[in-house]
Image 1 (spheres, rainbow, N blue to C red):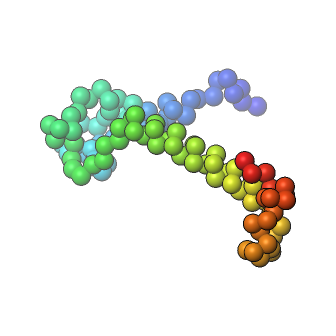
Image 2: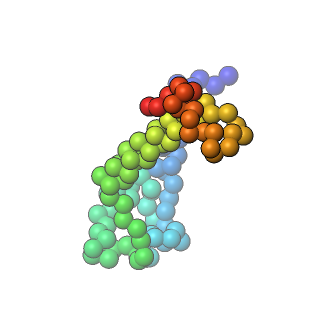
Image 3: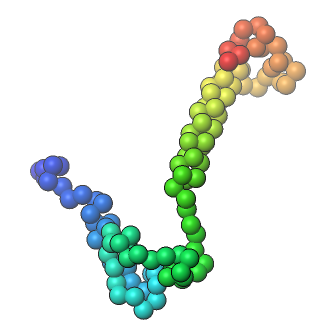
Length: 107
């Protein structure tokens, strides 16, 4: 049985992947680079060190989007939980009185 404490780190395997100019977005004519060393190359988008077109992701915007999505999913789950208390098959005219009768939590 293998020891999980001595298992190789999967991130190391990813960082050890070698990129070359056959990879889309990699600068043509550049020597191959380990994926883990890409950030050390000093490439500059504005100086056109990388081939276009390419996408730029801003960390703060990406993080804010993740927080927004988490809030959205929380609210959606709350709505789903509320709707599960409704009886399936009720017609629309019968549903509105249910909350007033205490059948559904208004929050």
